[in-house]
Image 1 (cartoon, rainbow, N blue to C red):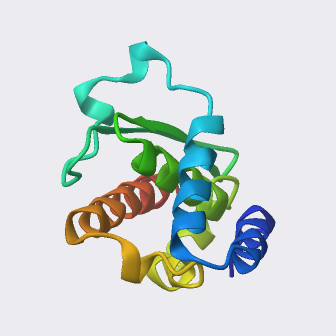
Image 2 (image 1 turned 180 degrees about the horizontal axis):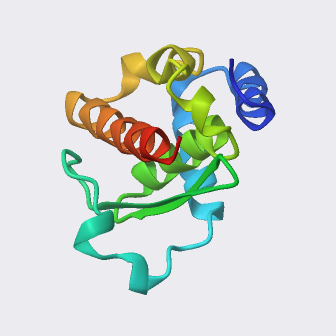
Length: 136
C-alpha cells in the first residue's frame, strides 16, 4: 500500500545491485532534501529514541499528512527522505495501515541498518503515526 513516490524509490533500488550503492543512494536522497528551517529544530519536534539528532515537522491539513525533517547524520537524512516517500501526502486514515518495516524491507534496508538506526526509524514512524492519529 505504498505511495507512488515510494514505488519509484523501490524501482530505483531494484537497479542498484549492491548494498553500498543503495546506501549511497539513501545518502544522496538526504542531501537533496531542503534543510529544515533552524527555527523548527526545537525540542518539541525532536524525535527521541534516535542515536542521531532528528527533527520531524509533521502537519495534517485537509485530512492529509505531510512532513519535513532533518538530522545531523547523512544516512538518517536519507531515511527521512525514504519515510517522506512512504508517508507524506497520505490521508491520515491510511497512515496506520502502512507497514513501514515491511515496506523498508522491500528496499533491503532492514538487514543493513544497525540496531540503533532501526530503533531510530521505528521512533520516527511512531511519531508520524501519532500525529496522523491525532489529526484524524
